Amino acid sequence: MIDFLKTWITSIAALLIIFTAIQILIPNNAFKKYINFTFGLLLTYVMISPVLSFLNKDFNAPNSLFINYYIANKDIEQNRESSLKTTMASSMKLFETNLQKLVIDSLDKKYPINDYNVEVKSKYNEGIISIDKITVHVFPKGVKPVENIQIGENTTNVKNNGYENIINFISEEFNIDIKNIYVVEG
Image (tube, rainbow, N blue to C red; front, side, top):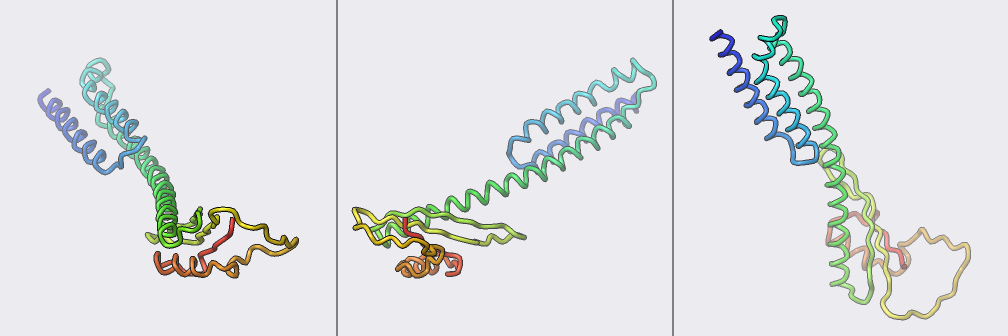
């Protein structure tokens, strides 16, 4: 009986230490409350296992605990990978949003005669964030005279639209390759 009590207390202590270590490693996100709930259920199970063993002599608490621990660890690993992907996607979106704001603020200070809207496309690969494309939409302030409209003109070549100074400024200010910066009027 004393060996069983010693084993029971040791398993509770070991479980608490493992739970604490896992909680420290898990990032704060929506899955943490589910993991804490699962840990609570497992801890409750381990704490009532002596009562269950007295009710059912065939009950083997250590084996059941190992199976439940394995299942919980598998779920934690899957949740961690899912959480990591979600965190990385939201971090990339936040990076793009912050870069957009920085570019707009810098352009407003350098060239206050226009309004700007910026789109950023970036990607993350092996710890490196690369900027694939920055598109700056320039909106001249005030009323502008109507220009001749040419039907069928290719508008994808935006390098020759008189905004080379904006392209060079963004390239120098943010250390971005000129090939990845596009300026479009309107």
